[in-house]
Amino acid sequence: MRIPTYVRRSLLVGLIVSTLASAAAFAQSKAAPPKAKPTYAEILATATPADWRTLDLENTLYMDLASGRVVIELNAAYAPAHAANIRTLVREGYFDGLTILRSQDNYVAQWGDPEADSAEPGKARAMKQGKSSLAAEYTRPIDSKLAFTRLPDIDGYAAQVGFSNGFPVGRNPKTNQTWLAHCYGMVGAGRGNDDTSGSGAELYVVTGHAPRHLDRNITLLGRIVQGMPLLSVLPRGTGALGFYEKPEQRVPIKSIRIAVDVPAAERTNLDVIRTDTRLFTSLVEALRNRGGTWYKVPAGHIELCNMPIAVRPAGGK
Amino acid sequence: MRIPTYVRRSLLVGLIVSTLASAAAFAQSKAAPPKAKPTYAEILATATPADWRTLDLENTLYMDLASGRVVIELNAAYAPAHAANIRTLVREGYFDGLTILRSQDNYVAQWGDPEADSAEPGKARAMKQGKSSLAAEYTRPIDSKLAFTRLPDIDGYAAQVGFSNGFPVGRNPKTNQTWLAHCYGMVGAGRGNDDTSGSGAELYVVTGHAPRHLDRNITLLGRIVQGMPLLSVLPRGTGALGFYEKPEQRVPIKSIRIAVDVPAAERTNLDVIRTDTRLFTSLVEALRNRGGTWYKVPAGHIELCNMPIAVRPAGGK
Image 1 (cartoon, rainbow over the protein chains, first blue to last red):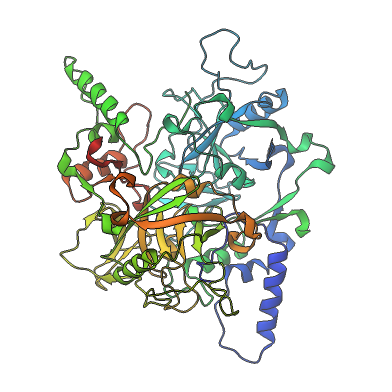
Image 2 (tube, chains in turn yellow, cyan):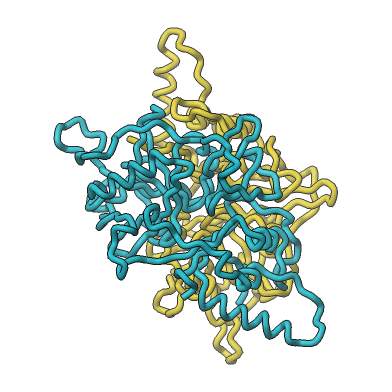
């Protein structure tokens, strides 16, 4: 098959891993072949239970669409006020029955209340305990207690880049700031021109090449752990900025719920690869300079937004 | 509207430009406002006819799907043998009635003959004059006669990056090599493990975050100038690497034709912004440090694959 091979950014392992593990074991049983550089998949197959973490149920959202479930992990370390407000809005049922309003090619999909800015009284969906305005959480102070696995390579948008508990982040030691980065699948809180005009009631997800120029300009608060294809294939809106021009083009959201509030039998239990381990460092190196037979020239580099964060059913089952 | 604003990568201007031009003119007629940094759209609105080039009909392909037309510009400077072979295959009607076989989320869509590798005689679609194997065209020598507008910023995958006649490219003066870069919308020739196993009969397009680690490992030969959303929203295949598991999931290609062979009335005549002009340099700067009221922190950087190449109907009509 004449194809470029690749490891998907959010790779659901399981069968694939076991197949590759068998292949690797078989290769090792042969007598003294030249020691090939292990591939990403081969290294991932060696992960132990300690290399995975289970998603925190209180910081996991399920957005259920007719096409399936999108699983979102909130980041309460980088955007505590937004994460808390979203949890409040979710528990009020604020999002249930709202719609995806916008899909702009190679950029973002966005959902929320189409009448949020309506001047007509009673048009906009009411909030109960949720807040309609929050202080920006574009950056936060660097804190030694906050995990950070730095990537070894340069980045054009930040002095340092790496991962903090599975999230892509930038850092600037000179300003003591760190921030979440706009990689594929990252979720943020839309805002107007005013820094305090966002609240998390209107959310967007990056569906194209990383718009890193948005970093430090808008509050990111989570990432999509599973279900990106349900959003990335949405028809592009033909209005300005990819907004759907006709209400019937909008995609209904059945509900958004917090995982801990969902009956255990209805949960999507997932493990995510830890990013503060030796295994993760090996995975990074496997993609910086790829093994296998297909690649001819190693990149010698990995860009922040090209590093996949592996996902599997909880417990590897 | 609480939204991150953005200029689309392949922005079809026209009405938008004229609206912005009026707005800019209006702003200038007011007495002594603080001189705001012009935005990308404002600069683009000042483009003269000399800032645009018309697509070369001999190097433009129309891939017609049931959903519409995809316009592809071939790059005969970087991949002359592949571009020539694809033109031969197109004129043989090789692609007509074949299908899109693969759509892998955040990576590529791919089309060609599903039976290309079939061992069964007569299964694979026959080629007449087209070649089924070509020498790789991963890189080419730097040539002072080949246009190159260098971006001012660092890049992790190449010593230098910039644009050559509208195409994103990398360069390494030490090795005297230059190459096309895997940005969103770039089209390449799938291959197996062997460097000569590609021919252009099986094509892929980047539909996700730029997989720049593929640079110099596979032959890129063109880019999609218009119609990306027709490919980027295709349902993701559920087989390995995003291949469609059932033949009926594949997306039929009505035809691929060279623009010059298409009756004038059926052509999609497009202009593309030139990348060797002062205007283009100003457009780059407008996105490195964005004007307008929305952005709070300028990026001070633009990544190669985040630079849009504007497109408009030929002649601006």
